[in-house]
Length: 302
DNA sequence: ATCCTATCCTGTAGGC
DNA sequence: TGCCTACAGGATAGGA
Image (tube, rainbow, N blue to C red; front, top):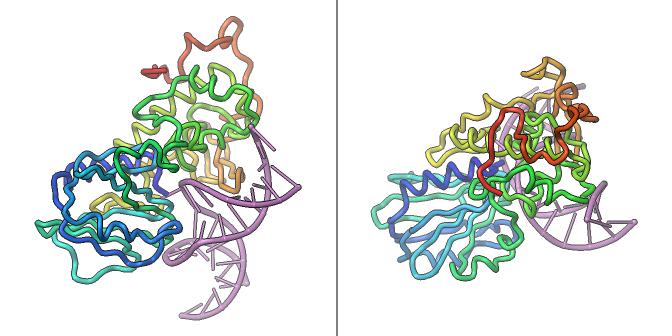
């Protein structure tokens, strides 16, 4: 559920609300989150003050004082909800309740419990096994076509699974992978190693554009995701292909197709994203260095 | 290296 | 109305 734009929306909201607040108490439900109950929070959080809020891919890093960081991942159904004055009744699936000294509270809710919440020494974050394997974050380091092309050289995976691989680029999930490829006009079944330079330029440009636009609209609410204030994200209206099987393509009118890749749904337009790309015009598309995506956006950095 | 399956969980939507 | 199945925004492990 929550991909980079949703996590970034939560990060910004937390920055503006809980930063500087000091934890008075922490309660946990006792249910395990992705393998372990976050018991360490009960002892480790009280007395700590919230500092900087960072994000890498889909991971949220809540820096605390005294050299600790709360590492959070929302999995499929996790959400942090802020309460200026917390309700008396604990709603179902609340697994962590952080109460601040001023009486406000931050609750972590996660029906499917695929999320994680654990305390890590800030100095050792780089060696945390979850974080160490991640590729660069596409907001901090916007990808360019040549960078993607270099990363993809020789790989035989399909380009959709490539975008989903957090070890390559961290933060793109199942919704945005389909959206990016549709806007870049690249068929999701294409072998990564066979994607042309100009197409990588388009993929890079659309990665930057789609993620940026989704953040501006507070993410996509398909069903579960909510902002810190329990509001749905607004990017759902902008989706061009995701969950639109058999509906007309918003660009050309052809029927959107649903296929399964890596056990997960992929949506694409067979007309806009042909299995074989159009031949590049003579003299261009060899290196792609001078070309940008179809919309002419220029990525910032290699 | 890649691909396929299974697993961790609960909620929901759709078919009958 | 209820029962059943399929599927869901993620990540990981094991085996072919």
